[in-house]
Length: 99
Image 1 (tube, rainbow, N blue to C red):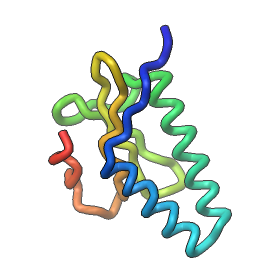
Image 2 (image 1 turned 30 degrees about the vertical axis):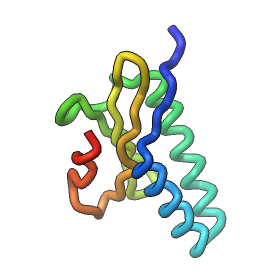
Image 3 (image 1 turned 90 degrees about the vertical axis):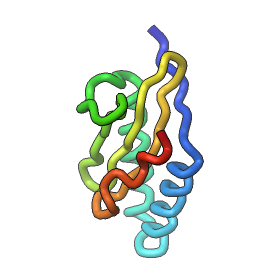
Image 4 (image 1 turned 45 degrees about the horizontal axis):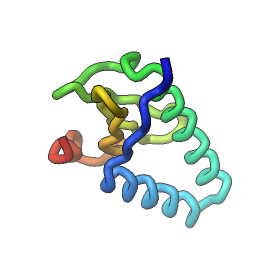
């Protein structure tokens, strides 16, 4: 079965850009490592979207191992929707307005 296409919420894309910029200002290697780990996380989510813990309103959370971020997503019939690239120290659930 082919993987569903990935759909990234505009606010999640803004979070991604902000995080990459923050890491780039401090350490280019850290920025590259962050992007690489996030890419692997998204690949794993696409390959097995039901694997990670279910949350409210059919959302799921994939926690990055080396960075304080999580990918918040949900699977629809047509796509995998990334709702947030959430920093672990940010107010929990702030992204729920995106549902």
